[in-house]
Amino acid sequence: MNLEGLDISILGPAFVAGLLVLSTHVPLGRQVRARGIIILALAIAQIAGLGVIAAHAFGWEPGGWSVQVAAFATALVGAFSLYWCEQRWPEVQEAIIGTVFIVAASAGVLMLAGNPHAGDHLKDLMVGQILWVDYQQLSLVALLYAVVLLLWFMSIKTGRQLLFYLLFALTVTASVQLVGIYLVFASLIIPALTVRHAGKHALWIAYCLGAAGYALGLSVSALFDAPAGPAIVLILAVLAVFFHTTRKLVSPA
Image 1 (tube, rainbow, N blue to C red):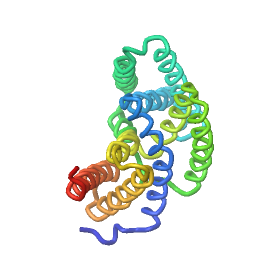
Image 2: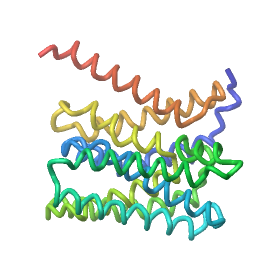
Image 3: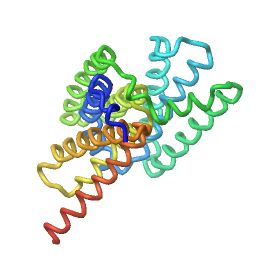
């Protein structure tokens, strides 16, 4: 156990990044679960990742604006295509989303086949680099998420499905580059799944569960020198099971 690892200058920005991700992913995750298209989160994240991989394959500067544009453009095209498929073939929507996910994942692997650092690129994409974020980077993400949340609540009132897909793509793309695919999916699904029967306070319980998961996961990662992303995912899962079990004991009905 390494107590010196509890460095607020590193864990502070990482925790803020987690809170920012949760601010959008909790409401979006509840909508995805309600619509029965949970795999959409993985598919859009993988499509965004494919854009990042393609940018790297072209030799573009990592983290530069060209990579951001490539990731967002790829995700938006994917989101629009999935929306079009939903309108045309709603009965096989989830199968189409699953197919898109595996095709995007396979395409990404093929693009990295000749890259000697392919393993590192894939690991960064999946696990993320949440401990390397800084407040300057987070300020831009916070601005994007604020716009997304505003448009998101407008889309609920208007019922525009295309807007939902596009906002989902923008949010997931930004988050994948911030925290990685594992944390994106976990932040979308685990809190939403845990509070599905929590009543009128479900949204706030989900936020608190997510925040506790990030705080404890980052602490465990720092204390035991473990990868932050997987540690947070496991802590989120443990908290979800604990919440569900406790709720059953308190309210057996």
